[in-house]
Amino acid sequence: MEQPEVPFPPDIKVGPGYDDALRAMVDRDWLQSQSYQSQQWRAKRDGMHPWMLKFEPKLVKRMAKLGVPMFCATGIRSAAEQAKVASEGFSKLKDGPHMYGCAVDIVHGTKAWGLTRRQWDLVGHVGKGLATQLGLDLEWGGDWRDPWDPAHWQVRGWRMVASGFPFPVFGD
Image 1 (cartoon, rainbow, N blue to C red):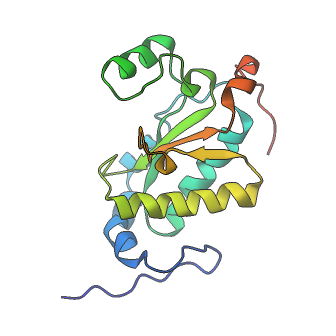
Image 2 (tube, rainbow, N blue to C red):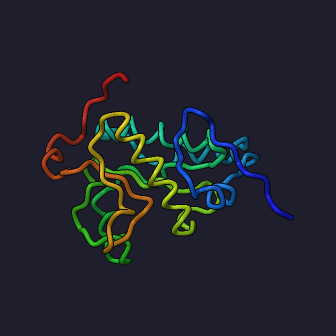
């Protein structure tokens, strides 16, 4: 049975060709669940860069408007956590942007990192549009070749601002 087209909210510019990717990501029941709500508090954010604190919840909210449950799986990592992900091959950096509050990993609520390339492209498309709209100079790991890291968003030039960690909390 053919699935009906998923209408995009008028305030979100998704672009042509993403209908099938979006349809496979939508999970409105999960969005209403207590488990989804609990996921929103999983990541450490204390001292995170203000751009990340602004971007992350807005991307999660924008994807939720599309019916897609996303959450921040990783915010700030300790040095030990970074060393572990580097030793497991999930990061090439022993001293990465997560350690300085300059990066977040945002994943699907039920599929985690298990999205297709086209689904990640949709997340990247929405996220890059949001970053531009907010005036934030962010990099998306889905634009990288090695390592390709589509859940990852970071402050461009994060090493230049890392000395400010932990960052003070400012209002929106």
